[in-house]
Amino acid sequence: MNSLQSSLPEDWRSVLRDTLGSSSWQDLGSFVRAERAAQTILPPEEEVFSAFHYTPFDEVSVVILGQDPYHGAGQAHGLSFSVKPGLKIPPSLRNMYKELASDLGIASPSHGFLEHWATPREMNQVDMDQTLAAFVQSAQMADCACFDLIELHMAHGYLLSSFLSPLSNHRCDEFGGSLANRMRYPMAVFE
Image (cartoon, rainbow, N blue to C red):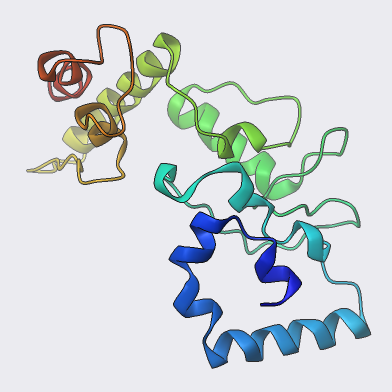
């Protein structure tokens, strides 16, 4: 195992074991090492897998893959579109913030450090109200577009299933515990 692989948390190493042992992974590693020797490659090697340290595999809900290049040294740190505190917000992230504000009414932060997006946490009432409003707005937009059907995904790993499952829902409020309580939020979305 090389140092890059050993920097992965064990839960991710286990999930990615076949990929990490493949010849194509070895070829990719050789290519990246050669590129790093010839030029500056970002993020620094020790930060390549930093996203995996923020979120255990079994708590992943969404994966954001970035393809836009960073505009300066010191920006990339292993979280797509994110920059460390104190750095200017990159254009791609600024555009994402604008879309979140226009589509969902989510205020744009004054920084570009996305650690809070990667760190799992329980939704508070404000989060739940904003998410419910976003579901309602999406349904209204679908209705205006004359859609005949709106499908809500509740398979394992989706937001609403995390409320239903006693394995992922450890809440101690009116949305946790009994099945009736765990169904409150998904039912509010359906209504």
